[in-house]
Each structure stands twice: as structure tokens, then as C-alpha cells.
Image (cartoon, rainbow, N blue to C red; front, side, top):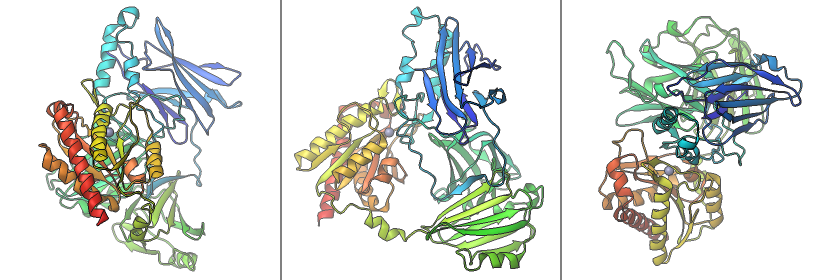
Length: 605
Ligand SMILES: [Zn+2]
């Protein structure tokens, strides 16, 4: 179905869907020379879509190719080309939970190899280069069944699997098809962590997986009270997603936890609890597991196998704004990072002692001088530092678990910055309309109805209403073509409009959800979101799902007030029928246009 690889490029995952006829689970590797490569065949397998290829920028792997080698019998061949001199006899293959995994190398375990476990500012991998290529599905020769020798039951199974698959597309919403590799772009899919086990443990919740876990800053939501933590570059096994799990098996609490695939390559963990703010994430020493628990219920003995004391500390000044503190331990350290708006608390659970005088000396005359360590009975050691909410904190742990690196980049106050980024040359009365998806990116699809077609239709209607009122309108696409998210942002930045409005259709795995959501990200976009949303809700008879603060790419990276409207659910049968009707399209367009006009008028006062 697709391929991806871990960050160290030592593991390659080939994602498969098993048909009722079963899948081959052991493989014979053959070696070839000039160039140095191996191949293996997967028998009785059909490659979905075109030949696939990944090119690696680093590691010993140069390239991996998947192709339909023969169709009678069905054989998919995988060829992996390595650097000359790489010993291919080290390569092993195994099958796990739908993945054929190629292990090309064992990661070197050294004390100086760090993995990021916490980051305020996760590297924003751009997936604009991933074509959400629904055409791949259509390339399955379902119509040519008569001419091919693929058994119809196998094809039916594959089709069925697509129907059931719920991956996420580039705007972070679910869609119903397969992701294939767009060979024309330099695809780099980087899944660093693969969650394959999740369960309750001692009134807490334990997540286990393969790879290296990273977490974003935890945040909280109200009514009901929830704690949310995102795990970027993470894939969650299908069977673990979206299950409401009771955390207190003894019924001593009503707390529940849910884990889901929030975006294409991001997992989200949500704890619903009256004491949500008490929940903390605890990282295992090998960065492969994460344990969530109400800190009041934390029993020291649940976590700790061996005592690890602080050995040494080093402080490095990277530049005027960035400083780095490395703590080295006698054994792998189990820790938790609690980053609030004005403090960083680092809990080291299995630390019993440290040389205070040594550490004070090390911190002296450095950025980390106010870093205070305190010994907490029953817990371990807490390191605290007062920071600003705009400071960017990054915590890395060495692969052997025996060192933590705390990097802090000092930020500037965000309020003036928010204002400063708004373009000064913005053209009054000019609007950029962004019809979601297009071309090979279909967006959400249900019953042969494509999000990309509805978004274009409604956008055109908004545009013509605005033009008739004397507004200047520029659209990021005027026909059914693929435009990357970055190109949409670049287009808008070039046009320098007064506002940017992106138009989308929502979808969910469940068929019940319906209604309208208006998304904004920057505070300077909130007023625009409010005005447009109120027009939509006033004019359209559906559920009001409210304003949502979301880090969608196009509304995060545009520097003028920018919002994204999800004008209804294609996954709800009733709403789908409405969404494609002239009446609903026109009402939606009119409401959006009226919202835009009201907002622009209020700005010119
Ligand atoms: Zn969309």
C-alpha cells in the first residue's frame, strides 16, 4: 500500500493490507552487485497504484523501489540499493501487524546520540509534497477484472480495506482512501514512532511502541475538562484508535483516555477528567514508552527499576539567545517534562542524589543559574526554571537514557510580534479565497462525492458575490488542479490581501457528526472567524460546532487574518446531500461573503 521509514533510516515499513488469502510472512533475500543491492519478492501480492520509490538523503540506503514484478502469478518485487561497501548480509526482514519491516541497520547506541523527547516547537514537516493521491485507488484495475488474472475476491478485499481505512490528509482531516507516493516530488515521510500497544496500568495509561517518542506541549480544554498531548511524527495502530478507556479499574475515578491518529503523521492523546491538570506524561528511559497518570496517584515504585544519580552537568551557550544544559546520569533516567507558560519543571523520578555544590558551580554565570534542583521524597528530583511563554524549550534524551539535554531558545514577547507579522502593505478590500484540495488531492471522499469539487464551487460563488460588491478577489486555484499548501501560502503572501479565507468540507469516521466549524490560529484572526461563523450559523440550519483554534498550515503561515471554514460533514449522509445542493452551496457562499464584508467594513472604521 505504501512505504515509510524511521528517522534513522534503519527501519523501512512496507504497509500491507492482508486479503482473505493471507500474506506471505517470510521472505528470501537475494543479493546483487553493481550497484550494491538486494531484492525480495512478495508472492500473491498486488501493488496498489504505480511503482513506488523512496530516495534517501542519508544513511546507507540509497533507494528503495516497489514494483509489480509479474501479474501471473502476482509478485511484488522490492529492490533496495545501498551505498557501495555496505554489508547487505546485516539486512533482516520480518512481518509485524500488517507491516513488512526491513531492518537495514542496528542503531549505534552511544551517549552522544540524542533523541528529542519534548519540543515546544516541533519541526513542522511539510506534507505539501505528499500527494493525497486518490487516483491510486482508481488505478486498481477494478474495471479490468475480466482482463486480469487477479481474483475478484482479492480485489474485493482490497477495495473493502480502502473503504475502511481512515488516514488523514494534508489538512489534518480524515479521508477515505490510500496515500500513495507522488513520484514527481521529493517525498520524505518521517514516522519516528509507531504505537503498537496501549493499555491501562495502575490507574494510569501506558503507551508502547517502536522508534523514538516525542511529545508536544500539553494543553487543556474545558467542558468537559481535558488534557491533550500530541505526539508528532507518530503512527497509531488502527485497532488502538479512538477507544474510550477507563483509567480507574477500581472505579475510584471517572477519568477516561483516548488515543487517536489526529493528523496524517501525528497522534493525539486526550484524557477527560475533572482533574485533567493533574495528569503528567512520563518518559521511559529508552524513549520508547510514555506513561500518563494523575500525579497524585503516582506511586514511585510503579516506574523505577534502578537508581540513577546526577553525575555531571555541562552548560553551553549556543548563541546569544540559545543555551543548552546537559545533565548526565549514572543510569538511564525516567523523567517527565511539565512546561507551563512561565516555568519549566523537569522531574527525574529515579534520581536519589546529586552534588549540589558541584551543580551550583556549573550553573554559576550561565543562563541556567536560576535552575533549582530539589529533592522530593517519594518522587525523586525536580529541576525548575522560570521561563517566558515565548521561550522555546526542547528536551533531548540520549539513546542510552543516561543524559538529558535541555535547550532553551529565548523568545520575545508574543503580543507585539503577533501584530508585527501582519502585512503593512495589505490591500484594503482584497480577499484571497482558498478552495481546499484539488487535482490529485481529492480531500474527503464519500459515495463518489469529492471535497475538492464542493470547495471550488462554493469558493467561486463567494468570489462572484464579493466581486459584485466591488471587492477584489484572488483564488489560490480556479480549476481542478493540485496546489501545495506552501504554494497557497506563497500566493496569498504575494497578493497581500486584507484577509485570507480557506474553504473546506469536514469528515469523520463516524457517520453521525454534522455541522459547521470555523478555524483560526493566530489571535489576530479570531475576530474574522467570529464574524464569518456567526453568519454561517445564522443562515444555515445545522449544528454549530463553534470556533476552533487549529494549527492548519494555510492559516498558520499566512500573515494576514486567516480562517478556514469547514462548511459541513461529507461523512453524514443527510448533510452530504445538502452540501452538493445548489441551495446549501449558495447559502454558504452568501454567509461567508456577508461575513467577509461585515469584517472588512468594521476594519475600515
Ligand atoms: Zn479539507
